[in-house]
Length: 436
Image 1 (cartoon, rainbow, N blue to C red):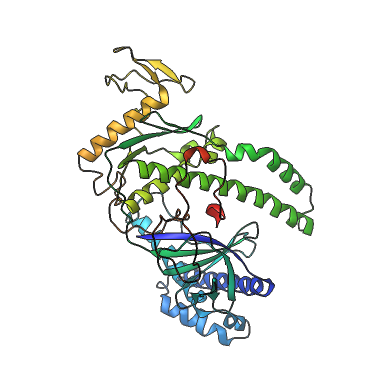
Image 2: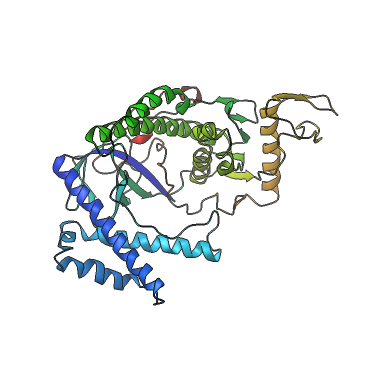
């Protein structure tokens, strides 16, 4: 399976200029190739192939006066930009034909130099890890990296990213074997919520940190200062970076909390079942800010890939399942209940239920039924493999590896983080947190 590891990097002034040039060249190649394909489609001509675009927009473009500066960056960056465009088109076509599951994917769009987030992708031909702890990137130089953990194996690709607040990161994709944990007899159903972030079927509650709500006061002040700056001025650019940095801190804390909670749940249970919530729909209600602050989708995604990594069973319970209406003691369906009803008494057996705990128990029972029916032993409810199967690198960063894994050249002496407690979620982990 593939895992992704992010590390903070600190380029000097000349390296920042070289990276800015690489970001711009990759963007120009993307836009030129996209324009050719759109113009061919509008004229009724055949689809322009990648070899033809590579010859016209990379090889020959370097020999022209207006595109001669493309030769200043690594050719790998330019070729990878074209490959990324091919992937975007493939996702779009697969979405149209139904081969790609999930939400519909739109066609590729032009990239702007005004985008606050810029990135380039490299394969092993354009980067290498040095023994002194630096990472060499072709035509950029040796970058000083803040190593916060070990790489379990040699990386297969590298993405260099500049965030909206001006931070630079290196994102390594690593192919690893599943790190199977000892089998357990316990399993857990999880009910996600807002008053409590998660309630487990054994009664354990994980309180909601509400990182965005806690940072709202400072964010309001910074955004008010930003709105008072003249558009296009240097002071406005400085104020925008301050707002972006505060949002980045909130996102880092939330990601750190998600990693701690998901890791402990996976280590403590052989099977994990969670309700498949319609987060995109809830994000359009009056609870939108709280829903996005909780980050349920990112948390469930972490549970899923960590279950595959550690040999655990993971299954989603359909969102139509009435987990809050059914008595977990006798199975009687007692009807819908408004959100302000946090406790209720079963009309048949008289059991007094905590709403969230009862829902978590029902999710557990339904998850067991799904597994017993053979739907989740090798495939989860969405059709994705959950045991010892290839899993693409997630968009976010992988959690800390366990002790005993090998170290990669250049990051000797690092120790894996200790097992964390769910009650410590308010404090980011040492060594750079999940932001590297």
